[in-house]
Length: 376
Figure 1 (tube, one colour):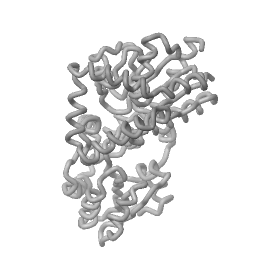
Figure 2: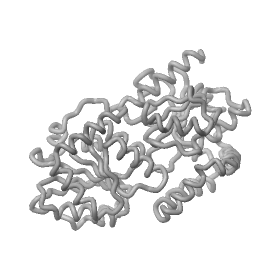
Figure 3: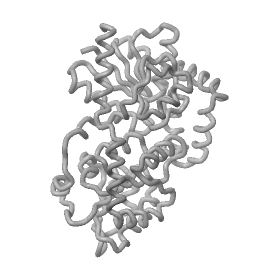
Figure 4: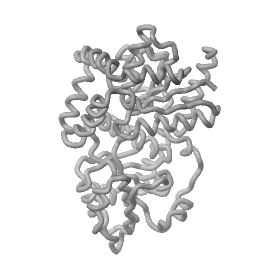
Protein backbone atom coordinates (compact mmCIF):
# COMPACT_ATOMS: atom_id res chain seq x y z
CA UNK A 1 0.00 0.00 0.00
CA UNK A 2 1.13 3.56 -0.64
CA UNK A 3 2.53 5.70 2.15
CA UNK A 4 -0.35 7.75 3.55
CA UNK A 5 -0.01 10.94 5.56
CA UNK A 6 -3.07 12.08 7.51
CA UNK A 7 -2.89 15.64 8.83
CA UNK A 8 -5.06 17.21 11.51
CA UNK A 9 -4.78 20.20 13.84
CA UNK A 10 -5.13 19.99 17.61
CA UNK A 11 -7.91 22.55 17.82
CA UNK A 12 -10.44 20.53 19.76
CA UNK A 13 -10.41 16.73 19.70
CA UNK A 14 -12.67 16.03 16.71
CA UNK A 15 -10.13 16.56 13.94
CA UNK A 16 -7.72 14.10 15.58
CA UNK A 17 -10.47 11.54 16.11
CA UNK A 18 -11.40 11.75 12.43
CA UNK A 19 -7.75 11.26 11.48
CA UNK A 20 -7.45 8.25 13.79
CA UNK A 21 -10.65 6.74 12.35
CA UNK A 22 -9.23 7.03 8.84
CA UNK A 23 -5.90 5.54 9.93
CA UNK A 24 -7.76 2.59 11.44
CA UNK A 25 -9.76 2.16 8.25
CA UNK A 26 -6.60 2.23 6.12
CA UNK A 27 -5.03 -0.43 8.37
CA UNK A 28 -8.12 -2.63 8.13
CA UNK A 29 -8.34 -2.32 4.36
CA UNK A 30 -4.70 -2.68 3.38
CA UNK A 31 -1.98 -2.71 6.06
CA UNK A 32 0.90 -0.43 5.19
CA UNK A 33 2.51 2.84 6.13
CA UNK A 34 -0.03 5.25 7.59
CA UNK A 35 1.15 8.23 9.61
CA UNK A 36 -1.07 10.65 11.56
CA UNK A 37 0.44 14.04 12.37
CA UNK A 38 -0.69 17.26 14.02
CA UNK A 39 0.22 20.00 11.56
CA UNK A 40 0.66 22.45 14.44
CA UNK A 41 3.70 20.44 15.58
CA UNK A 42 5.37 21.58 12.37
CA UNK A 43 4.77 25.28 12.86
CA UNK A 44 6.57 27.97 14.81
CA UNK A 45 5.84 27.54 18.57
CA UNK A 46 4.44 31.08 18.80
CA UNK A 47 2.09 30.42 15.91
CA UNK A 48 1.06 27.06 17.40
CA UNK A 49 0.22 28.59 20.77
CA UNK A 50 -1.72 31.49 19.25
CA UNK A 51 -3.59 29.37 16.71
CA UNK A 52 -4.82 26.67 19.09
CA UNK A 53 -5.52 28.74 22.16
CA UNK A 54 -7.12 31.75 20.47
CA UNK A 55 -9.89 29.51 19.13
CA UNK A 56 -10.41 27.71 22.44
CA UNK A 57 -10.47 30.94 24.42
CA UNK A 58 -12.86 32.65 22.02
CA UNK A 59 -15.34 29.79 21.93
CA UNK A 60 -15.12 29.28 25.69
CA UNK A 61 -15.11 32.86 26.98
CA UNK A 62 -16.44 34.97 24.09
CA UNK A 63 -18.69 32.73 21.98
CA UNK A 64 -20.69 35.66 20.59
CA UNK A 65 -17.48 37.25 19.29
CA UNK A 66 -16.42 33.94 17.78
CA UNK A 67 -19.81 33.67 16.08
CA UNK A 68 -19.37 37.13 14.57
CA UNK A 69 -15.87 36.29 13.31
CA UNK A 70 -17.11 32.98 11.89
CA UNK A 71 -20.02 34.61 10.06
CA UNK A 72 -18.05 37.54 8.68
CA UNK A 73 -15.15 35.46 7.39
CA UNK A 74 -17.62 33.12 5.68
CA UNK A 75 -18.63 35.85 3.26
CA UNK A 76 -17.18 36.40 -0.21
CA UNK A 77 -16.30 39.96 0.77
CA UNK A 78 -13.68 38.57 3.16
CA UNK A 79 -12.10 36.20 0.63
CA UNK A 80 -9.04 38.46 0.49
CA UNK A 81 -8.56 37.85 4.21
CA UNK A 82 -8.61 34.10 3.59
CA UNK A 83 -5.96 34.44 0.89
CA UNK A 84 -3.78 36.60 3.14
CA UNK A 85 -4.18 34.14 6.00
CA UNK A 86 -3.19 31.28 3.69
CA UNK A 87 0.08 33.00 2.86
CA UNK A 88 0.77 33.68 6.54
CA UNK A 89 -0.02 30.07 7.45
CA UNK A 90 2.29 28.79 4.72
CA UNK A 91 5.14 30.93 6.04
CA UNK A 92 4.65 29.75 9.63
CA UNK A 93 4.25 26.08 8.66
CA UNK A 94 7.81 25.76 7.37
CA UNK A 95 8.32 22.46 9.24
CA UNK A 96 5.62 20.80 7.15
CA UNK A 97 7.86 20.94 4.09
CA UNK A 98 10.51 18.93 5.94
CA UNK A 99 7.92 16.33 6.96
CA UNK A 100 6.84 15.92 3.35
CA UNK A 101 10.43 15.61 2.22
CA UNK A 102 11.47 13.10 4.90
CA UNK A 103 8.37 10.88 4.90
CA UNK A 104 7.68 11.26 1.17
CA UNK A 105 3.97 10.38 1.36
CA UNK A 106 2.26 9.24 -1.80
CA UNK A 107 -1.15 10.48 -0.71
CA UNK A 108 -2.14 13.20 1.78
CA UNK A 109 -5.44 13.39 3.67
CA UNK A 110 -6.42 16.43 5.78
CA UNK A 111 -9.11 16.56 8.47
CA UNK A 112 -8.59 20.26 9.26
CA UNK A 113 -8.50 23.23 6.93
CA UNK A 114 -5.08 24.52 8.11
CA UNK A 115 -3.02 21.88 6.28
CA UNK A 116 -5.41 22.16 3.33
CA UNK A 117 -4.64 25.88 3.09
CA UNK A 118 -0.90 25.33 3.10
CA UNK A 119 -0.84 22.33 0.77
CA UNK A 120 -3.42 23.63 -1.72
CA UNK A 121 -1.25 26.73 -2.10
CA UNK A 122 1.77 24.55 -2.89
CA UNK A 123 -0.26 22.36 -5.23
CA UNK A 124 -1.56 25.39 -7.09
CA UNK A 125 2.04 26.46 -7.65
CA UNK A 126 3.05 22.98 -8.85
CA UNK A 127 5.15 22.37 -5.74
CA UNK A 128 3.10 19.38 -4.58
CA UNK A 129 2.56 16.36 -6.79
CA UNK A 130 0.81 14.01 -4.37
CA UNK A 131 -2.99 13.71 -4.49
CA UNK A 132 -4.53 15.91 -1.80
CA UNK A 133 -7.75 14.93 -0.03
CA UNK A 134 -9.84 16.97 2.38
CA UNK A 135 -12.35 15.55 4.88
CA UNK A 136 -14.78 18.17 6.23
CA UNK A 137 -15.56 17.28 9.84
CA UNK A 138 -18.72 19.34 10.40
CA UNK A 139 -22.15 19.45 8.76
CA UNK A 140 -21.42 22.80 7.14
CA UNK A 141 -18.40 23.94 5.13
CA UNK A 142 -17.03 27.35 6.08
CA UNK A 143 -15.19 29.29 3.38
CA UNK A 144 -11.89 28.30 5.04
CA UNK A 145 -12.39 24.76 3.70
CA UNK A 146 -12.84 25.70 0.03
CA UNK A 147 -9.83 25.37 -2.29
CA UNK A 148 -9.85 24.53 -5.97
CA UNK A 149 -6.54 22.65 -5.90
CA UNK A 150 -7.80 19.83 -3.66
CA UNK A 151 -8.15 16.60 -5.64
CA UNK A 152 -11.19 15.35 -3.75
CA UNK A 153 -13.44 16.44 -0.88
CA UNK A 154 -15.39 14.17 1.43
CA UNK A 155 -18.38 15.80 3.13
CA UNK A 156 -21.29 14.82 5.35
CA UNK A 157 -24.32 15.95 3.32
CA UNK A 158 -25.55 17.28 0.00
CA UNK A 159 -25.97 20.68 1.65
CA UNK A 160 -22.28 20.70 2.56
CA UNK A 161 -21.48 19.83 -1.05
CA UNK A 162 -23.63 22.72 -2.26
CA UNK A 163 -21.78 25.15 0.01
CA UNK A 164 -18.42 24.11 -1.41
CA UNK A 165 -19.69 24.31 -4.99
CA UNK A 166 -20.95 27.85 -4.32
CA UNK A 167 -17.39 28.72 -3.29
CA UNK A 168 -15.85 27.46 -6.50
CA UNK A 169 -15.08 23.81 -5.77
CA UNK A 170 -15.89 21.53 -8.71
CA UNK A 171 -18.96 19.42 -7.92
CA UNK A 172 -17.33 16.34 -9.44
CA UNK A 173 -14.57 16.40 -6.83
CA UNK A 174 -16.97 16.23 -3.85
CA UNK A 175 -18.31 12.99 -2.38
CA UNK A 176 -20.95 12.68 0.35
CA UNK A 177 -19.62 9.81 2.44
CA UNK A 178 -20.31 11.19 5.91
CA UNK A 179 -17.94 12.19 8.70
CA UNK A 180 -15.40 9.44 9.50
CA UNK A 181 -15.95 7.82 12.89
CA UNK A 182 -14.23 4.86 14.50
CA UNK A 183 -15.01 1.84 12.27
CA UNK A 184 -15.79 -0.14 15.41
CA UNK A 185 -19.22 1.53 15.50
CA UNK A 186 -20.16 -0.94 12.77
CA UNK A 187 -19.81 -3.75 15.33
CA UNK A 188 -23.22 -4.97 16.51
CA UNK A 189 -24.01 -4.29 20.17
CA UNK A 190 -27.25 -4.39 22.13
CA UNK A 191 -28.52 -2.07 24.83
CA UNK A 192 -29.01 -4.98 27.22
CA UNK A 193 -25.49 -6.33 26.73
CA UNK A 194 -23.86 -2.97 27.40
CA UNK A 195 -25.94 -2.27 30.48
CA UNK A 196 -25.03 -5.67 31.83
CA UNK A 197 -21.34 -5.09 31.09
CA UNK A 198 -21.23 -1.76 32.94
CA UNK A 199 -23.55 -2.46 35.84
CA UNK A 200 -26.45 -0.29 34.68
CA UNK A 201 -30.06 -1.07 35.53
CA UNK A 202 -32.12 -2.78 32.83
CA UNK A 203 -35.55 -1.76 34.09
CA UNK A 204 -35.47 2.02 33.59
CA UNK A 205 -34.43 4.49 30.89
CA UNK A 206 -30.84 5.71 30.78
CA UNK A 207 -29.66 9.24 30.01
CA UNK A 208 -25.98 9.86 29.28
CA UNK A 209 -24.64 13.39 29.66
CA UNK A 210 -21.27 13.99 28.01
CA UNK A 211 -20.16 17.09 29.89
CA UNK A 212 -16.40 17.23 29.42
CA UNK A 213 -16.59 20.10 26.93
CA UNK A 214 -19.23 22.09 28.82
CA UNK A 215 -18.90 24.65 31.59
CA UNK A 216 -18.98 22.72 34.90
CA UNK A 217 -21.67 24.94 36.42
CA UNK A 218 -23.94 24.34 33.42
CA UNK A 219 -23.50 20.59 33.70
CA UNK A 220 -24.33 20.80 37.39
CA UNK A 221 -27.58 22.64 36.62
CA UNK A 222 -28.57 19.85 34.22
CA UNK A 223 -27.51 16.97 36.47
CA UNK A 224 -29.04 18.46 39.61
CA UNK A 225 -32.30 19.16 37.80
CA UNK A 226 -32.47 15.62 36.44
CA UNK A 227 -31.74 14.01 39.82
CA UNK A 228 -34.62 16.00 41.29
CA UNK A 229 -37.11 14.73 38.70
CA UNK A 230 -39.72 12.27 39.91
CA UNK A 231 -39.09 9.93 36.97
CA UNK A 232 -37.37 6.57 37.36
CA UNK A 233 -34.16 6.74 35.32
CA UNK A 234 -30.41 6.22 35.32
CA UNK A 235 -28.27 9.30 34.72
CA UNK A 236 -24.63 8.83 33.70
CA UNK A 237 -22.48 11.98 33.69
CA UNK A 238 -19.18 11.60 31.81
CA UNK A 239 -16.66 14.32 32.70
CA UNK A 240 -13.78 13.01 30.61
CA UNK A 241 -10.56 14.72 31.65
CA UNK A 242 -12.45 17.72 33.05
CA UNK A 243 -11.48 17.53 36.72
CA UNK A 244 -13.26 20.79 37.45
CA UNK A 245 -16.51 19.17 36.38
CA UNK A 246 -15.99 16.16 38.63
CA UNK A 247 -15.35 18.53 41.53
CA UNK A 248 -18.44 20.57 40.66
CA UNK A 249 -20.76 17.56 40.85
CA UNK A 250 -18.93 15.66 43.60
CA UNK A 251 -21.68 16.29 46.16
CA UNK A 252 -24.55 15.20 43.91
CA UNK A 253 -26.07 11.86 44.85
CA UNK A 254 -28.73 9.51 43.54
CA UNK A 255 -32.30 10.35 44.49
CA UNK A 256 -35.22 8.06 45.14
CA UNK A 257 -36.11 7.96 41.44
CA UNK A 258 -32.86 8.72 39.62
CA UNK A 259 -29.71 6.62 39.95
CA UNK A 260 -26.62 8.79 39.33
CA UNK A 261 -23.27 7.57 37.97
CA UNK A 262 -20.32 10.00 37.76
CA UNK A 263 -17.43 9.04 35.48
CA UNK A 264 -14.12 10.62 34.52
CA UNK A 265 -12.13 9.59 31.46
CA UNK A 266 -13.32 6.28 30.02
CA UNK A 267 -12.51 4.17 26.98
CA UNK A 268 -16.01 2.77 26.49
CA UNK A 269 -17.94 5.81 25.28
CA UNK A 270 -19.53 3.81 22.47
CA UNK A 271 -20.81 1.25 24.98
CA UNK A 272 -22.59 3.99 26.92
CA UNK A 273 -24.11 5.45 23.77
CA UNK A 274 -25.50 2.02 22.85
CA UNK A 275 -26.84 1.56 26.39
CA UNK A 276 -28.58 4.96 26.40
CA UNK A 277 -32.11 6.04 25.60
CA UNK A 278 -31.12 9.73 25.33
CA UNK A 279 -27.68 11.31 24.87
CA UNK A 280 -27.07 14.88 26.03
CA UNK A 281 -24.00 16.45 24.42
CA UNK A 282 -22.41 19.36 22.64
CA UNK A 283 -22.68 19.53 18.86
CA UNK A 284 -19.16 18.60 17.77
CA UNK A 285 -19.20 17.00 14.33
CA UNK A 286 -17.44 13.80 15.41
CA UNK A 287 -19.41 13.33 18.61
CA UNK A 288 -22.81 13.66 17.02
CA UNK A 289 -21.78 11.43 14.11
CA UNK A 290 -20.79 8.72 16.59
CA UNK A 291 -24.16 8.99 18.33
CA UNK A 292 -26.03 8.96 15.00
CA UNK A 293 -24.14 5.79 14.09
CA UNK A 294 -25.82 4.09 17.05
CA UNK A 295 -29.25 5.55 16.32
CA UNK A 296 -29.67 7.38 19.61
CA UNK A 297 -31.79 10.54 20.10
CA UNK A 298 -29.88 13.60 21.27
CA UNK A 299 -30.38 16.77 23.24
CA UNK A 300 -27.83 19.34 22.12
CA UNK A 301 -26.69 21.84 24.72
CA UNK A 302 -25.67 25.42 24.06
CA UNK A 303 -24.04 24.99 20.63
CA UNK A 304 -21.12 27.32 19.91
CA UNK A 305 -22.06 29.94 17.30
CA UNK A 306 -20.76 28.90 13.92
CA UNK A 307 -20.05 25.28 13.15
CA UNK A 308 -21.79 23.81 16.21
CA UNK A 309 -24.95 25.78 15.49
CA UNK A 310 -24.90 24.41 11.95
CA UNK A 311 -24.44 20.89 13.30
CA UNK A 312 -27.33 21.35 15.73
CA UNK A 313 -29.53 22.75 12.96
CA UNK A 314 -28.78 19.71 10.83
CA UNK A 315 -29.73 17.31 13.63
CA UNK A 316 -32.96 19.18 14.32
CA UNK A 317 -33.73 19.27 10.61
CA UNK A 318 -33.48 15.50 10.23
CA UNK A 319 -35.44 14.94 13.43
CA UNK A 320 -32.65 13.26 15.42
CA UNK A 321 -32.23 15.88 18.16
CA UNK A 322 -33.57 18.92 19.92
CA UNK A 323 -31.31 21.86 20.70
CA UNK A 324 -31.57 23.73 24.01
CA UNK A 325 -29.63 26.85 24.93
CA UNK A 326 -30.40 27.17 28.64
CA UNK A 327 -29.34 24.22 30.83
CA UNK A 328 -32.22 24.66 33.27
CA UNK A 329 -34.63 23.67 30.49
CA UNK A 330 -32.98 20.30 29.85
CA UNK A 331 -34.56 18.27 32.69
CA UNK A 332 -38.07 19.19 31.54
CA UNK A 333 -37.21 18.25 27.95
CA UNK A 334 -35.89 14.88 29.12
CA UNK A 335 -39.04 14.09 31.08
CA UNK A 336 -41.21 15.06 28.12
CA UNK A 337 -39.28 12.76 25.80
CA UNK A 338 -39.38 9.86 28.25
CA UNK A 339 -43.13 10.33 28.59
CA UNK A 340 -43.55 10.05 24.81
CA UNK A 341 -42.00 6.73 23.68
CA UNK A 342 -43.38 7.15 20.17
CA UNK A 343 -41.58 10.46 19.68
CA UNK A 344 -38.40 9.01 21.16
CA UNK A 345 -38.58 6.10 18.72
CA UNK A 346 -39.16 8.49 15.81
CA UNK A 347 -36.02 10.41 16.81
CA UNK A 348 -34.08 7.17 17.04
CA UNK A 349 -35.26 6.13 13.58
CA UNK A 350 -34.29 9.55 12.21
CA UNK A 351 -30.84 9.23 13.74
CA UNK A 352 -30.35 5.83 12.15
CA UNK A 353 -31.41 7.15 8.73
CA UNK A 354 -28.93 10.03 8.98
CA UNK A 355 -26.08 7.84 10.22
CA UNK A 356 -23.04 6.98 8.12
CA UNK A 357 -21.21 4.45 10.32
CA UNK A 358 -19.08 3.23 7.38
CA UNK A 359 -17.89 6.70 6.43
CA UNK A 360 -14.22 6.08 7.28
CA UNK A 361 -14.19 2.77 5.41
CA UNK A 362 -15.97 4.24 2.38
CA UNK A 363 -13.58 7.21 2.24
CA UNK A 364 -10.57 4.90 2.36
CA UNK A 365 -12.03 2.69 -0.39
CA UNK A 366 -12.39 5.75 -2.62
CA UNK A 367 -8.85 6.94 -1.92
CA UNK A 368 -7.38 3.50 -2.60
CA UNK A 369 -9.36 3.33 -5.83
CA UNK A 370 -8.00 6.73 -6.84
CA UNK A 371 -4.47 5.64 -6.00
CA UNK A 372 -4.90 2.64 -8.27
CA UNK A 373 -6.16 4.83 -11.07
CA UNK A 374 -3.16 7.14 -10.70
CA UNK A 375 -0.82 4.13 -10.45
CA UNK A 376 1.07 5.60 -7.52
